[in-house]
Image (cartoon, rainbow, N blue to C red; front, side):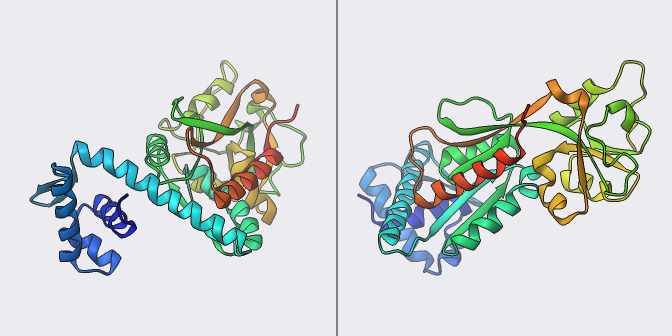
Length: 301
């Protein structure tokens, strides 16, 4: 078995693409890292990194090895977490790969509540595009993935799925606030802040515009955070899922009214893990807290 220190060296060199940068981050001598990598390459009879003018890049063999390295490091963390749990000192680290809307929506509340009862567990959140989320989970860089409309992959398993219906988001003093639900036609009378064409949400919104009506947003953006900020200024209206604005609703700066047109149009958020890996104690605790939070905001007919 590879020594744990060498595993850490390989992982950091692969991430940084440079022995010197890896040495700085690990606070060890560059020569020590280089010596161990050269010895391992000699033992395996093949190079693990291509030496390029501007740094290092994994070879095909290195790609295979680094997956084993990261799986081994994760397993080491799981074992240490279990040992700590047996001692009554649950600790560890959990990394969640997700998209911007979820990171700015329901996750802050989840993490706040989780940290209150699990102060020894570090939670890391990586905001990535859909393909980056999949890559982070499958490479072992993330323990959990949370996103809308992830492409099917046999190497990933959905732990829980949550359906969310779109709604109109507005300031509490907005004229439309207080209704049980609103129609898209009602909203068209106000300045709209909507997702741009790079987001799948835009396609959904355009399907809800009644035939013959003029859909003319005043702001188009791929930033959920910007949509929420502008929606706090009446008479603007934005369209997002309930889970995206849970924090703002809690603080009383935004209100959410379901769109009656969107009863048949929902988005599904999936909480994913690697198909052949079991969640360790800390990751299982975080997953359970996410599931509980999302069930609160899921569609209930």
